[in-house]
Amino acid sequence: MRFPTIVNTCLLACISTSLAETIPPDHILWGEEGRPTTLDKRQQASATPTSTRVADSACTNGPFTRSCWSNGYNAATDFDAKWPTTGKTVTYNWELKESTCDPDGSDSRPCVKINGQFPGPTLYADWGDTIQVTLKNSVPNNGTGLHWHGIRQLGTCPQDGVPGITECPLAPGDTKTYSFKATQFGTTWYHSHFSSQYGDGAFGAIVINGPASSNYDYDLGPYILNDWYYKTSWQQGLLSHNNLQAGGPPPNANTVLINGTNVKGSTGSYAKTQNLIKGKKYRLRLINTSADNTLRVSLDNHKFTVITSDLVPVKPWVTDSVLITVGQRYDVIFTANQAAATYWFRASAIAACASGNDNPDALAIFSYKDAPDQNATPSSSAGSLPQDCNEPDNTNLVPWVKNTVDQTAFMDQVKSLEVDISQTVTTNGQNIVVWSVNLTAINVEWQDPTLEYVATKNTSYPSAYNLIELPKEGIWTYWIIQEPANTRVPIPHPIHLHGHDFYVLGRGQGVFDTQNSPSTLTWQNPTRRDVALLPGGGWLAIAFPTDNPGAWLMHCHIAWHVSDGLAVQFLEAKDQAPLGDGAWQSGCSKWTEYQKTMKYPKTDSGLKMMMRDNLF
Image (tube, one colour):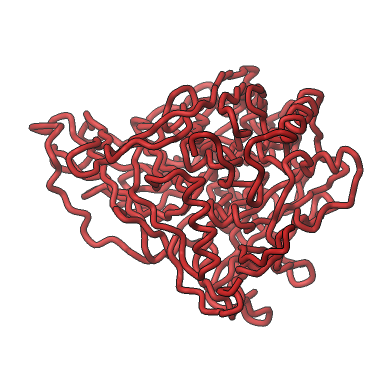
């Protein structure tokens, strides 16, 4: 992550639309008519949903009817309000172990793998399934845990997988089973929210099969895109923290990977997608699982039709490329309508997003079935692609299901969250520079998660938990996430919220002007997603309703930033929040006992990156 040198001496001292057919009008329902604008209480995941629409037995999901699903559920179903119940439980048994990785042929270095795979195994389920994942921690000197990124965990907050907030970490040798309902559908991912494991291999894709807002023939599955470092993430996190003290940027990433591979010189390998059939439409599930880098993704000579942003279906939008920041996902469709040959697929780190990378351009090969040689090196070129850091706006990412944000209480209820670097004092009296929200760098205690405070009715939350209470259900909340006018580090931040999709009301440069900026906001069906870019030196306006009781983290998804404190948590309707069961309490007891003698104590916010083990 690159940013301008900090100069404050005080701190230094311390296509065409035919490419993807839109859905026929008879399958649109709320997608055209819009849902009611009143805020209804969301059903709980344990409840049995009902449908007022009679199932159309003739409408089954297929290449020409991707909007259909089953039993009256389709792409126009508002999954905030209802979802199918399949009665099926999909189960996975995973084990996290230390290993070594050499994904581009440069040199092997220590990493962690789930079931021996890098990236980790893909989790598949259908919309309405119950998902159960049993995880064993076989890393000897680290805790662990898994966060299910973008999964709202409606009524299942203790399953969110955030040490110090929704759970205690999983102690070495211990096993935990996560269980939650797939109330949404689409593409997302899971990752560790503990230690250095996220940047060192503890992540993988999630595919929840469901309907789509545009038709396609074949699903090519997830394409995991991530930056990669030749040092471990613990080493990178330490270097980043030290550089911050001296007014410098984090170290560059060393390369970019596509589905876990790339080429370094004459070694390594390109990811390959072969046997494309001319005239057919293909779905790609793009996921940026980077620690730091924002990426621009394209396929030479082919246009993309975007059909989802994160887990929200959108009206099909045609573009030459997509900008994907850390944590985001886009499902896109392309048509194999070019000459039968091989073509470069590209994922490039964007310098304008402050994404430092020594080898910023990753490549993969897409080849047509009738190409003379499907393994031939492509001769295609990218053409002129944008190099800016401008995220698609509300005119591009229009949700398929129409929702309206109530703006009547905006001026009375809106709150500001200021993102900047600040100075803090450690327990041993050392002055250090940290990332903060409203001048507080979050610092949670693993053995005392927020949900334990709720369970014991202890309201003496430490100030370092950076906790904001939202006591009432069923109200809109509005937030201006703002870099101050005098910030010394005007760089973009990918902001991710747990437990909700938020509504992106608008963004802009400079300071939000309460007199003039509100008139620029979008209230009718704004973009909804769970990660959005805060512009460097600017502001991001979001809203979300309090309809999911629990403790929910909101943070910058750049690993080094959240490690250094850039996060806040919302405690929502705590009296209705679901609490941990006996197994949850037992896991905390095991962790508390382990922590008494653990080899490496916590050295950062507790939410990412800064733990060590015997390999790191």
